Every structure is written in structure tokens, then in C-alpha cells.
Length: 404
Image (cartoon, helix red, strand yellow):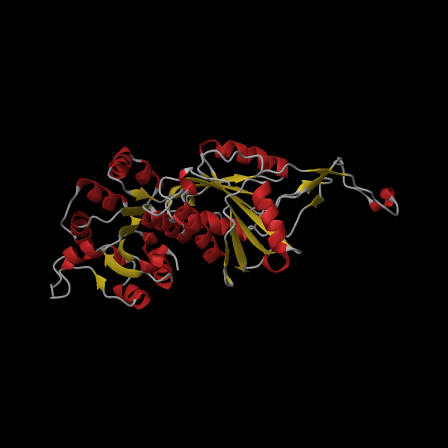
């Protein structure tokens, strides 16, 4: 379960055309396990009805700043005190201005002043309204108070114009909430570099040497690090995956591209998680045009050069290194050799045949002190969380790695 599964989210919906998209957001939050208390402004109710949100969240919807207090709930006071995060989505120019000015003549304004919960805002409005100096000044004020702003995106707007002001995708808003909720986690203040996916070693303009890596494990690790408060650089080979919101994405293709990217990223990092399936070899010669079987003849011999050992080339000084060993034979012996030979604090060993490309993983964690931990069959998201929790407990994430 993600941090959202334990969260109490106050979702405030203001009156713009994007209000209908907030219904999907409320649904996704509820599906993730969050308790969602919805506030609908008077103008929001011109676009969406309270029944929509009460049906999706299975909670009452709040609209009246003077709703009756009970022994269990004291209106805006209880909403503010119980909230883990106050999410305003969509936030119109008017709502942003009112929040910046601290006005308290509607329910959202009262709750925003009555809560110590972090504020997250997803603006949505016309381009000129968003770019107006007043709106930009109000956003700057809210940022200076610690608010997180998600979006807006650029593209076609409700008016038919093209510009900046589109409501951010639901996935981005959920990702931002995870970062907000996890910012005081066990990796808070850490700078984590994660590598993911396979590498492609070109043979000609249309062919390459590669492997079956999907990148799922690396992307799950990047998300897990964000959930625990780290800043994350994700160095990724070609995949079909959406990168986690908030991660700095560096796209690479070849092993030498990845080596250069890793060496640059670890200069100010405290942890390297090398989960990428890097090609061990590359073609010695790359052909400038597509190889034609008619010209090659009956056989083709490809000479290979060895690719660099990226993780072994990263100094252990001041950085906690985690490696992966996906093997088809002698799993533990090969993993232990890599642990020692590459100067790792931890290595994750798993069966290459059953793990690569799968949503699940059965892994064994090996540590520099010789200890091991067998994990049951889990999703890659669950395995990623355990890996980073173990790293945090070991203290290596603070740059105190000790290799026996």
C-alpha cells in the first residue's frame, strides 16, 4: 500500500470547467485507500453535483461554511485538523487569489486557515488568466509559504485556444501528493540515483543487441525513493513506462551512455541503485546502413567488445551502492561474487527467467556483512519498498558504507 492508502485528503473543488476531472481524481484517491473529504465551492456546483463525489468517496460532501457541528465533527475545524494534505483541484484564478490573501468567507478559506496540513494546488484556467501578473504573484506567495503547485499543462483549452492552463493529469497530481506525504520519510534529504531498463547496442540503423528488461523494477525503485522523501534521478534505457512524477529523468540508449550519465549523477548523490540490465557486450563495428541478407551471404560474424562495469567504476566513498544479479544458474554464488567484486553494500538476487518483464519478483537480499534475507513472492513495488527500507536502516544512505 502506498502512502495514499493511509492518508486523509481534503479535496477542494473550485468552479471551473475542469471540475468534472476532479471526480476521476476523487475516485483514484479512494481506490488507493485514501479517506477523501470533498469541499465543493458554490461555483463548482454549477459544473458538478455533490452526489457525484459522495458516491465516489462514500463520504459526505461539504459545501456550507455554516454546516451544523456535532459531537464528532466541528465543521471546518475538524476538516482542517484531521487533514494530512489539503488538495485544491482544480484551482481557479479566483481561488488562488483568495488562498494567497487568506480570505475566510467560504468553507475552503476557513479550512485553509485552520489546518497545518501541506497545501497542494492544481491550477486550471485560461492562458491569459494564468499568465496575468496578479495570478503569478499569488502563486509565488503560496509557494513561498510551502505550497506545492502541480501543473498547469499546455495544450488545447476549453475556449479552443492553445496555451498554458490545462488541468494536470490525474497521475501527476497523485504523484505530487505522494511526494508531499513522504517528504519526511526515512530517505528525506537523500539524493538517490536509480538506473532502469535495458541498454541497446546498435548493430546497424535498425538493429541492436539488447535484452528483455522492461524497466519495471527500476521505475518502482524510483517511486519508492520518492515516497520516502528522497530526490531522485532516474537514468533509463528505452522502456514503455511512464516515469514517476518528481523524478529527474535521463534517457540513455547504450551502456556507454549510461556510464556517462551515472558518473555525472553520482557526483552529488548519496545512493546508487543499479537495477538496469546493462548489455555486457557491444558490436565492435556499427554498420552505417541496414545489413541486407542478400549481401551478407549465408553467415554473419559479429565481433563484440566488452562494455564497462558501471557500478564497479563508482567509488564507494560517500555513496551507498545497491546492485542486482539476475541469473539463470548458481544464483547465490554469482550474486555473492558480484557483491564483493563490485564493492556493493547490498545486492538483490533473482531468477532472470521468472523476473525479467514480470510484474512480480522473488528476491534474495545479500548484504556486505554476509547476511541474507529471502523475500516471498511480491510485486516489484513491494520489493522496491523493502530494498530501500533496508538501505535506510543500514545507515548507508548517509554515506557511511563499510565494506568488510
